[in-house]
Length: 327
Image (cartoon, rainbow, N blue to C red; front, side, top):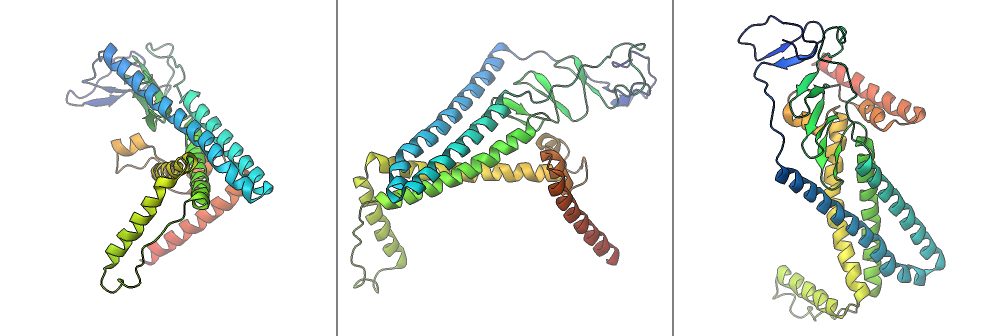
């Protein structure tokens, strides 16, 4: 019997999956109701998400407040214009990053729309085309939707559950999540550049050993170790502002490297017209054509920009087709 419309179906006994010819719902013959997650499991996931969200918010506030406190006296000492420019850019990047983070965190990831199911008179033909039944929610699940056990709901076009935003990344907030990643990369690059520049300005004088006489007898590795030792020794004379600047520089570079890898991965999946979960479940299956039109559609670019990108994409396609024909 079809779970979508309730009609009695005839299918081969050995068939593990069958599709209703009326409503289009897909049923698995061995599908059974699953037990809900335990209370301890749900509490652990909730505490994990809250911990990561708290750590990320505190880190962003520390980078913003600590960077302003440590950098602004140095840039204002250069000129008033440099100081005002730095504070303005910092305020814009901070506001943009925090706003995109809040939207990605608190916006719904994309809950499926309520649809009629269960009995034949209510369900019209092809109303549940390629729908499956979610044994966690006990409701229909649309194509390319996945159930998140942390959010306890099905998410349309679910990419993954991100504990750092405490939310799933799905159809409704995926573009905001990618914009947040872009803003983090730009903000961390700017913070790293400013902190490195400020650290260079206030770094204590370094007394390098006289290596000219022993350059012939010492190897290049030993010379490099001597230079590093001299620089590290001068770091003991840094002020509190200098130590904050050094930490912010290393932290910004480290976060920038990790987020850049995640951003490149996200953009590659968008270019392929795929999501992370679908890529894992079917690595050899493509859910759409690869091309820049996927990125244009994803970000909703204005018409002039989308026209240029799509024209460039069409030119590449024509070149690939002509090359394949020649082969």
